[in-house]
Length: 276
Ligand code: URA
Image (cartoon, rainbow, N blue to C red; front, side, top):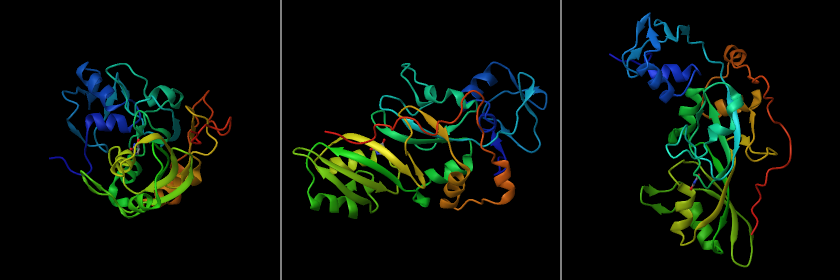
């Protein structure tokens, strides 16, 4: 019987940073994966990470070094590992990381901004768990001018088809003749949530950029580039969702700098402003 310690084989392989779950499924089908020396039959098999010896092409899985990637996702990139239609995905932009990381939530194809990817699954699970209310901040260009009463509706909560939204923090940045530019912070991560909230007001989102996620900020990162998180950022993120940051874990959580791919810490300012 599966228990909390056990994991399915494909999850165990992706957690070890060797590849995605779909890579693992393919490798199992190809007969390249063994559990305790016996060829694995199914990627859904339950394995015990403490006891079972998993190998891919004869090489044991290594314990993955935790890695935390902050990407400035451009518009036009899918938040998925691979696309049957061959469209660009966020993984095309982080090839230098050298370990498999999962995305923490998603940004729509037409949304740009801060996307976190990590193989720290405990952290990712909590950040995506609505119970932890991790705040996410977006800049929005609306297709109409929004009145104060409309912004108040965003603040108190609007009715969406999957239920009312939690209170949001909203700030008017400016209005042009035709458009309003606002900043909104939500503590949920429902599908297309900001777009649907603006649509509920009778307007539309023309541009959407995520600028903050919990304690993380997009800062000066260039569009399409990534950097690895600093230690203090990892600590702040784990604190946010009630995960331990004890000295032992801290030392294990060495920040990995992939060879030949220094984290990008500066560079040209990304175009994250909203212009008419
Ligand atoms: N809300 C949206 O509508 N889209 C995103 O990509 C993120 C938040």
